[in-house]
Image 1 (cartoon, rainbow, N blue to C red):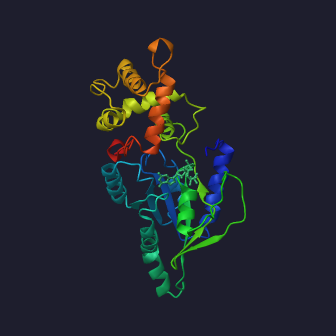
Image 2 (cartoon, rainbow, N blue to C red):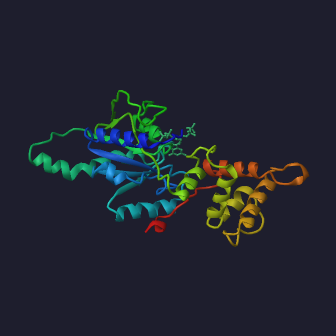
Image 3 (cartoon, helix red, strand yellow):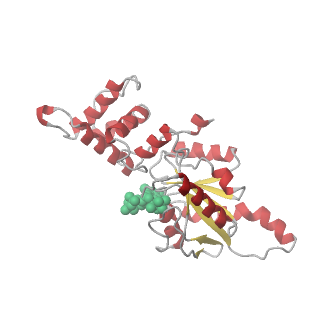
Length: 292
Ligand code: G4P
């Protein structure tokens, strides 16, 4: 689900998260492992105000494992603990509770020494931009369907604590954040993975961007999935070479219009569908080195 964000929404979303911070011990910041930078809220550090935080790289089943490992190392360098998970399939989920507990341990030990805190479950809030997998993760951790659906910024509802094992309690309503809208590359990357509505952007434009940025690095996957002959674009800045790849995909998949020309919109749809579902292979759109 995509939300139309307006400045009022952002202020309200931020206020709601900060209100919830009072009740919780730690935050799980959910990112998409294929775009860990672009799926991140630009003001996250400011919003969380130093709350202990575990970063989860979700949809790791769709991402390039080597890139995910590098992202985890990069977060560690920034002093953030992170973990790759697949909320839909269940991979990595068992580890979350122990990591969260470890996160709050130093603070709790200090408080326990002063007799301030008794042993209890760690209270956790999940935050992330739309479509990153917040509801899927909450339901997975709860072991049943509890997460609020149709979540919108600014809509408040009664919230409940969900027990996860004996050591963690989760708010059933996640904190919804917005991405960095003013950066075009961020927008395009989110569109490629299907997290921004296509009505806003043109399908061919998104597919063009996908080929331009991914064909070089993941050419073997393109060849394997579509049976393409010939090599990748030699010059990714030459639009004709990018369109040529889309045409080759279209021809292989029978996306033709009268006269034997390739229907570029159809070919774009085929590419994006295969990319988003993982049929093209495990692909990551951005590497941590790009942001260092
Ligand atoms: P949100 O609350 O953050 O908005 O996200 P939500 O849980 O609704 O998840 C968005 C989509 O991402 C869902 O797919 C969900 O199944 C999928 N998803 C969540 N986590 C993972 C994961 O780790 N791996 C993969 N491969 N997919 C994940 P959908 O197309 O909206 O629905 P459906 O496919 O479940 O029918």
